[in-house]
Image 1 (cartoon, rainbow, N blue to C red):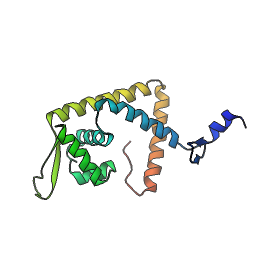
Image 2: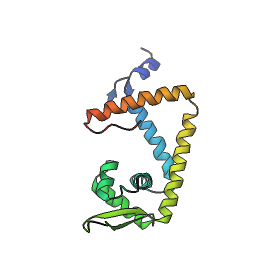
Image 3: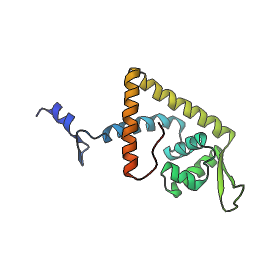
Image 4: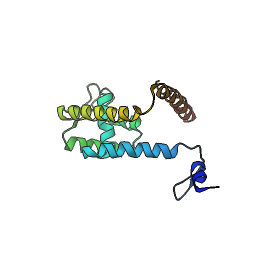
Length: 162
């Protein structure tokens, strides 16, 4: 086998070998691309994810729900919220019906920054997708939805929206 053929067959990350058809190297590269992109806002990645989640899901802003939605441990959510509060991007406020619970809301600065972040990330993704012909993007999206549904079903969780 040539070196080129070997690279196509196996991804070697130095500690383990993955099957040639594994998508894990691609996901790692996509993840790195987005993580590099968000560094310009000088916030930890978990704080950016929480800020964006609050932007997209403003009614889902309780710490326990944030932990569940982002798959971060509760202590990571607490740290993210502390960071966002210190930077005056979000506030914890009393829950309207249960004094034991807190809600997290974006401040005006948090609303403005999260809108800019979301717009930037959508533009980043759109620019990347623009190099692919539209009919191929449509097929890719169908493939990805099937792939994601298969992954999600193996975990016994709800499917994603198409």
